[in-house]
Length: 319
Ligand code: A3P
Image 1 (spheres, protein in one colour):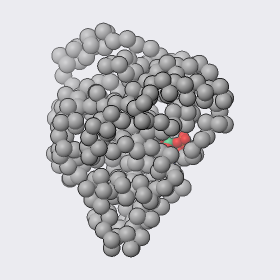
Image 2 (image 1 turned 90 degrees about the vertical axis):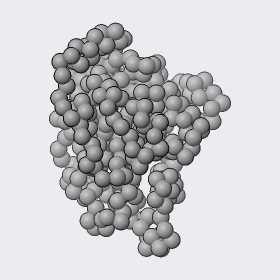
Image 3 (image 1 turned 90 degrees about the horizontal axis):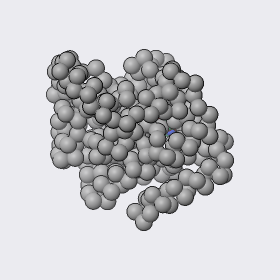
Image 4 (image 1 turned 180 degrees about the vertical axis):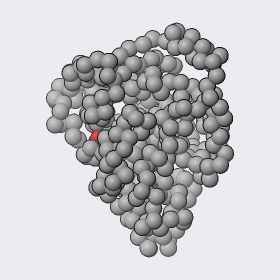
């Protein structure tokens, strides 16, 4: 464990200078790395994770693009993994943010430290990341740890992200661009973790190659039938619900605890922030499918549809 030393700081600055840069529509700096536009603030922590994170076979890694259901998936997987340790009434989710209980590699674990000691975290450790599949630390791909990916209809993801960034005003250096310009950048793939199609396809292909390693979920499917999705997640985590647990209604208790209504009404999720940048409350807006219709035109939707048709091709991925 240790602070970032000066020689690695210099190397980092040198690397940064070789990369293409853009401002996101909200003024935050993006850099292009291995084909993906990444928020510059998260780049050093991502490299630290790449260099130093050692996955254990029992780890569970939650991978998402921002605004695709990360908070929900964190709450669900935490509850599934720890259900024999805490009753629902005593769940740590009642008093801690899902983002505290399931830390993000780049936003929490490696945010300030280049190589923190993670050995004391009890198994199964659950971490989240927004890293594209090809940028993940090698040990995540090479160990027997599990990866759970969740994604969401890009139109809803775009609208959700726009609200989130406007609410948090992180990119202070510029006036935010209007929705048309922001959408145009999104369609060009220039957005945090973009292009969205490559982020999704990376995990989709990994899932097709090895479904026991990568579970591929969609926000819309969780909204439609949370019970069957929670069962599926638990089976994938090799911790399926027993018949007794099912009879006791444990799946329902977990889905209710982790619902938008329940989590968004807890004081811990209504107050405070992460790293002084992101309000806890901003992770809970509407939690609905199809909210894009209130903000985007049919022509915009058509543009995304054509984009998805051409990018997803016959991969089998669709929304
Ligand atoms: P909206 O902005 O459309 O409401 P992330 O957790 O990846 O940052 O994504 C945030 C999105 O998920 C927001 O979408 C938020 O409201 C929604 N969300 C957060 N918690 C949820 C939950 N428990 N159930 C369903 N949706 C949830």
